[in-house]
Length: 174
Picture 1: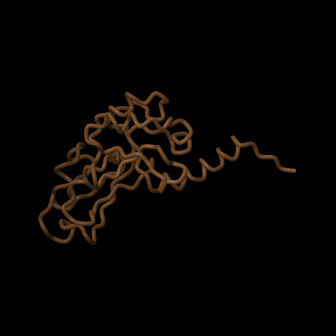
Picture 2: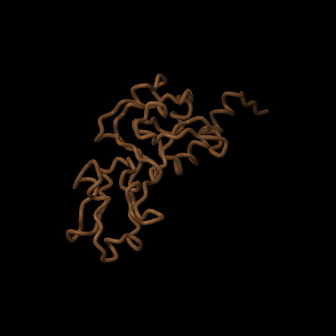
């Protein structure tokens, strides 16, 4: 007979939901790997309260087992990498890390829709990136290209994209 404790069931569910959530939720800088993050986060919301950009949202019922946990939707408001959120996180679900070592996700450009890749003049994502000319460079002096080794996934590029919907988006994950 198989017996499953409540803790075991919860760990299983958190792990399963954690994998699904990691694919769709962009966590604040310094977040632990998704399953560990979900287990450690106390869901106090202090990280959202101290965010000067008001970029950190708190999951509601539509987020499944991630309810009460912080996430960022860069199109609405991007992370400016101030790292204040990690300073108030008492559970250490958000750790303090150097800006260059943050890995919230990676920006991806849809070249079929990007104005610069279609021949128009646009360098908004390139000029706005906090890792200027490193995370986003210009091919042929005009076409933005993301360097995934440098991109931290802050979402500023997605936030400032002048095309709707944005042609550069951040995919969550480490």
